[in-house]
Length: 105
Image 1: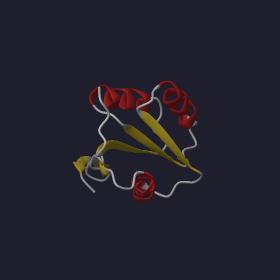
Image 2: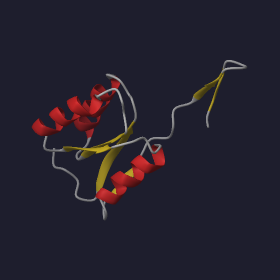
Image 3: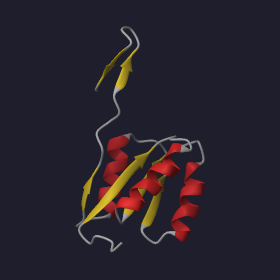
């Protein structure tokens, strides 16, 4: 796949667990480049993501020292890619504990 020079997949990440690795691989299977911003995670996912990036030229990983929220992670990624159009997925639906219904935030 020829990497895009104008668009990228930006994945903000905070304590995602093992799911992030399959998510990143699925993104790479469909698009290049893919950038991941690890937003102060304490699950050590940045180590394996960095290993993936070392062997995958279309993957870049940034690690923020402390959690600043999704906006900070997206801002860091967009700032790193000035001049490149970035788009993120909407937030996951959240379960309302009182009514056990699904709602978006």
